[in-house]
Length: 505
Image (cartoon, rainbow, N blue to C red):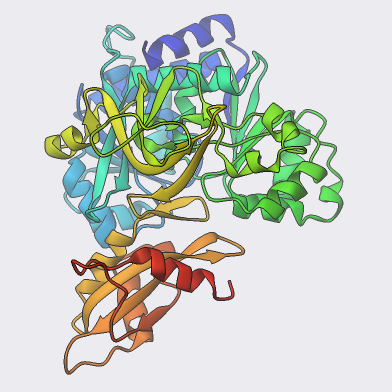
């Protein structure tokens, strides 16, 4: 299965139907979308993009994501989206690792991408040159037959337990299969209008560029999220499904009388990408006139792997414990809860969650050893500790990978700790997530000073801001004499989490 097959069919069957559009901006029918990205494919090919090459993309939400992702798919190349909130050293690391042959950026981010990777040829998607590429590019001969199902179409960087981001390689087939799985799990209709509110460089929404091609669905994007504008957009564009992270959901529910919106067309609201407080879920269930869906997933498997369905949310009125789960396995995926040796444990017992599905990544870019550690006999080791009950509902009970989620974005303490350990006054550091009423979780740090040194928390935070995205900078830095440890000296982060959880948010 190939992304290009989906788009070719959509252009044939639904030529005038809106395939991609920006709220308040340009809308593209499927025939024009197909012609546009084919022309861009020709222009990129003349700039050195071929099968297996990579194209970096750093931009705010807009049609440029559809342009680049789909043009790369036609060429058998891969798009490499860059988080626009990263610090320059983080961007530089990813570019040095991915080695793209060209970079695309909007006017707001072209300088940052150039500063991080001065060797990389760039084109600004807000300049006349880009418009010429879209309008006058010549479709390469042999499209769409060039693409292969196993071509890597998307490389999304996600941090690991080592603290160094790794490029997750997602193939055309994996992304298409993900679309089938989502369509079945979320009961997408032929007339589906999906609204993206979160950045398209995130896996959860970026992978939707491919999955929403499955049967001519309409995919609309908000450039910048605001709660009142979100509610207006649903009514104005007949939105049928959308996704919100908890921070956004809280802001939507805070709009007085929901801004006068009727929300008549909205049938499904997917919430998640971060821990969601039960009071917020209950408020949403009693306020918004639609079905609700949430689940568990990870970039290494094109995100969504389990689903708590609208029917489960209704059942939760008499079984509130269901809202603490992440639902049951989605179509096309097999899950196991295993011990350290990979042996499945009995229902109700804790173990590592392992995944078998055609959505699993091809591997980590340039990291064969990490890939072999992550995928064992075809099963993806998630590193997350979970429990499956007697009805096959899954509950995530711990994060073996030590990840925290803030505002819907994955943040890995080990990456922050690596920066703290580079500070001349710090001998040791440990970072955990602290509950936060707005962002779900925020990173907080515990540090031990080097002998003969003192630690200035404000100075350390300023140091972190030069190396890390703002969301990764610890909200508090506590200087301690020592930390709780196991018998072999390892820091017991569970006790640190309990300590911060007991403090006011």
